[in-house]
Length: 409
Figure 1 (cartoon, rainbow, N blue to C red):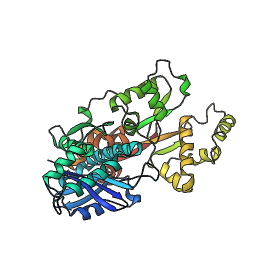
Figure 2 (cartoon, one colour; figure 1 turned 45 degrees about the vertical axis):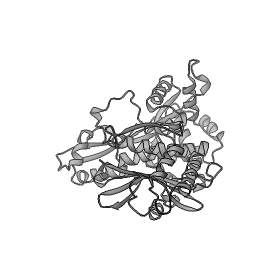
Figure 3 (cartoon, rainbow, N blue to C red; figure 1 turned 120 degrees about the vertical axis):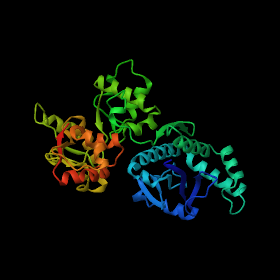
Figure 4 (cartoon, helix red, strand yellow; figure 1 turned 90 degrees about the horizontal axis):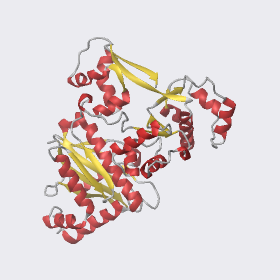
């Protein structure tokens, strides 16, 4: 069994606290205060995958979350929901990271919308003081009280039991509202995975026409999707905002594309590479475009932006060359350029051009070495982070048997 534990750490004004640790009848792998401090990283390290080897054969996998300042934050400045997994599952840690990220996103959403997490954490802390005798934090009476009075405790127990079950999947609602269907089973190979849609969870919608042009039969769910979609939020992220299962959301996105009201693009990240579109110089009235762009109030000049994208470059490198206070404005300008197809994303594909000495991991990836799948799609299908995939490809690239090529979509 890969999953051996689950817990939640919070950081409030009074300090770092281990709010809950499952299974409840066993002590955590480390002393609670030490574990809480180790799993409360500084804000620059939040919002990204986190791993910590805590015992022989045991690794903590999580995605710590920092709450933005504002009314929704309250006294809760950060939290970290973590999984304890067998270290031999490290090869598939991307699965657990993805699951931790989705659960954390749901908790953050409910905190921002309803103050749910802070309220539940305060309740759990009060129960510890009222019910548990000194130095017996794992007392059965305390767990009974938590299960009876805390919705969060019941949800985390359901999550833990479901992920340890035979199927390794669980379908629940956080705070009885945000639906969460997650699993951390081994990645399903492409040939085994049925797809209702060609759209991928890491992609998103880019609205290209006025919403008043929508067909009169458009549903309320579709309108809500179009109102909330954002090139910075993936379809997976949007499931929480739109409150729809992923399959249903992708079906609505397909409708948007077929009606010509939106395009599907990869969610904007620093690793995305863009260049001037090959059609940008054809039948384009640049004077009119310049006037339209000026009306957006951007602090950038259209001609300078087009010149910047004359050669392929990662979005992160563009942002590094811009003052931090102008980052959001630059991203808005990139979205504007994408919407008018003045720039396009450069995709990376992998070709095997000679026999190679394959490791077991590389052998699993060999079906993707035919140039038919973009880098981002391989990462999703195999539940790998970019750096993990690059490391797996490194031997083949070094011996010349693998070639990475790039071209605009």
